[in-house]
Image 1 (cartoon, rainbow, N blue to C red):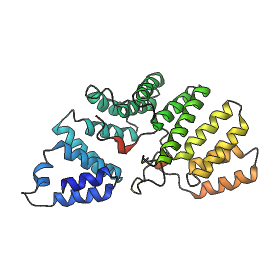
Image 2: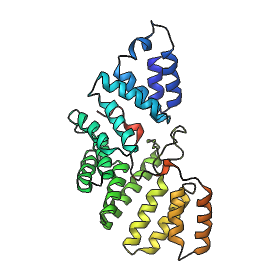
Image 3: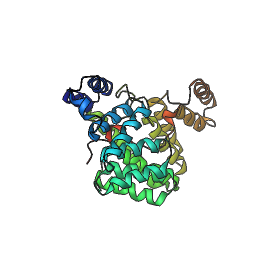
Image 4: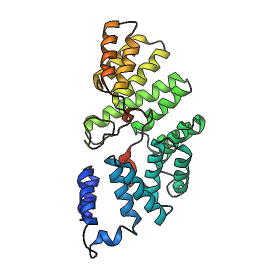
Length: 285
């Protein structure tokens, strides 16, 4: 059962894997799960990851906390716990989790990316840029790292650098999507269980449009915002940004977008302006 659950987990079938783990927990004392779960931090960490990916954060955090109690330097458990804590904006605690495992895997681009996200949340922008650059050096073709660099350069009003990194992110995203070799938590067509996405691709085009405005490229900015709406016309943040851009040039369309925006509920799944991938928290050492 353990191998079946692990196989389903690696294939992205998180609910199915979680059900098998839960079934195993109900078996008798002679079964592997009953013996191992209370004292095996690896299994607890895997369960925590599955709970997190199926949007059961409280259960996820309980499993991760138990894993860390058993093994304080457990890499995956600390990294995922740091991610959960970051999503709740407790950045100092998240950074402590990351520091506890940094020596184990100083070459992990995902870890450096997540450290950068926490530092950006603290508005420690210079240190955050350093971390994102380190992550990009280690994994130069990760579009999420590129967009994070683009976002932080927007924070520092370095519009050309922001434009370059956002464009790179879009190109990498499209290349990976075309090859169909990557599953992203921000793609509407991905695992139906990943409801708690940060942004979708439309938000990337909104960032691109905003940079182009700052660079006085208004016709290209219009194209970017229209592409954003085409890609993500159910994301309220995308709709709102597109409507704001169109207020002066196409008031009728802008009003239609504002009306659509008001009908949608702005939920937490679109609030975090940085990219982290919950599927990357395991097996990155």
